[in-house]
Amino acid sequence: MKELTADVAIVGAGSAGLCAAYQAATAGADVLVIDENKRPGGQLFKQIHKFFGSKEHQAGTRGYVIGEQLLQKVEESGARVMLDSLVYGLLPDKSMGVISNGVNYSVKAKKIIIAAGAKENYMAFPGSTLPGVMGAGAAQTMVNVNRVLPGQKILMVGSGNVGLIVSYQLMQAGAEVVGIVEGAPRIGGYGVHAGKIRRAGVPIYVGHTIKRVFGKEEVEGVEIAALDEKWNMIPGTEKAFEVDTVCLAVGLNPMTELVWMVGCEFDFIPQFGGHVPLHDANMETTVKGVYVAGDVTGVEEASSAMEEGNMAGVAAVEALGYLTREEAQKKKDEIRSRLDTLRSGVFGEGRRKNKEKQIADMETYKEQYKEAADHE
Image (cartoon, rainbow, N blue to C red):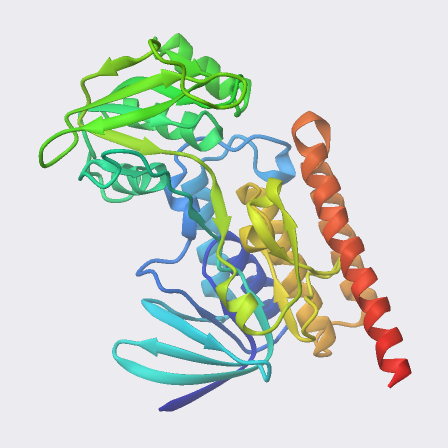
């Protein structure tokens, strides 16, 4: 087994991980970024739509362009990037087991930042294992990254932003989206995305779910049904569609396996995708020297992930002495201001409150731990 060392090791080369790498490397730290994909950038390179928000959050710029700009900054910062490399273990001493190109590595770092992102949720229903049933993210990768159309006639399940945006992008690529199915009584995503879909003539069936997908060796059709107030299917409300693809946009779940493995404490916050690690305002977990950033801390959008990556990177190198307290505080104040902007308004208020709960619970944990230590 070969050994590698770094001041800061970052798991994940998506938007959060790359921002953390840039902050840490430009401060002078030796930074190693590890990602299991063949290309860095994470979700940014799937996002051909323009970002919303303010100028400081690059509103009006397409996601893949933001990704290209970020990659260039990281390359110029001097951070090392290991691609096509899997982190399969993380110990409390901050050593990691990594396999890359068939070679096993033991990576030892003074600080660890976990920016592993999130994975798609799935639904089980009759026919859900047939070829042609896939996650919306998988379809988005096929279209926007690999330039392959997953199907000609598609039904989308889920009307959150992912379901709405991917539906529109599939239409742009030449597919027919026969409809969007949403179990809740109202659309889950932003009105601007839903409006584009409706103007294109795509029906959105709220209060409906999939009853079954049928086909011999692949998807040939789908049947949906309306739901009552207890989420039970209502007999006689079935509608059938001839499709060759069903895409599932039914939420994301933080990829917290390494965070559990290293021994961090967790909260359960459904709005963030389930179990999420406790962390303080610096993104440091209950395990000293281990930081988290991005969707692994709770599913939000790319802009928030980038700012959390910035925060984790700054905090890590401050702790290592590469930034003075004053230098780091100035950077942190700017990052917090941008995060506060992202988590304001009708759609951001809930995320802000949940993030505050994570941080408050972290402070409670610290106090309880201190009391327990004082009694020993």
